[in-house]
Image (tube, rainbow, N blue to C red):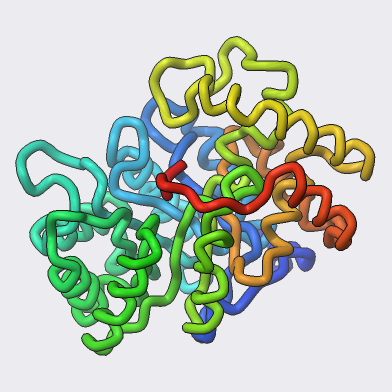
Length: 338
């Protein structure tokens, strides 16, 4: 059993209220999308979780299909939770999601009650938990009535399998409809999870940030470093062995090439202010008033510590924000997952 010093929490980790709920989240949360699958170094994965907790990260973000292979991140994190964190369960926020392709057959993805609730039960088994703190509909389903998907989320809360529910990557119109349907069912939508970074500012352009604040809904953003494009790795092009150099995966070389001019301008700007590009990008996200928490991934403990160092960077001044706006303005996007 992992037993840290009682003073383990890093006092420099700020927590923010999630909308107008009673829940506080750390400004930086740990995402388990990559680096926790069966293909990854399990010794390092375990060390990352321990280090994150010691540094005040109390929220671990997962989904049914995280790995690879799909489901393996929950299996591995579930083992670490049971072996290392059982005594700390009430100090942790564990989230999972359903909706992406998970198993064969017609019920292995999307938003039917059959898929959503079966997926939740499978996630709980893999995580070795009685409940998750936050359960999301991971993506909208254009072919299933919103009432059906939202009723499954309501059942998750009413059955005690989830404490709160959230929505991920829903476009503005569907998001607003889904929140209202949940409210009519007596369930509050706690949180919304979109991709958001200096290079992908569609929640601003679509007015989502303002609407979330108006409704008292929290916002936890993923890919604040634009899948590594804002780490400085791609300033000189696409290096061999990088995520964008591989044919599979979500980050493609074409995306890097499309943003390369902006990446280089932001890198130069960060250097002029004595910051790394990564710290500039994270500080910018955290300075957005509507953001409750930013989800970061880490391949090593050192990478995690480097991301957390952004918390010590000063808030960006208006002049710097104006320059960033000029380099990469907020624009609407037809692809909420970009």
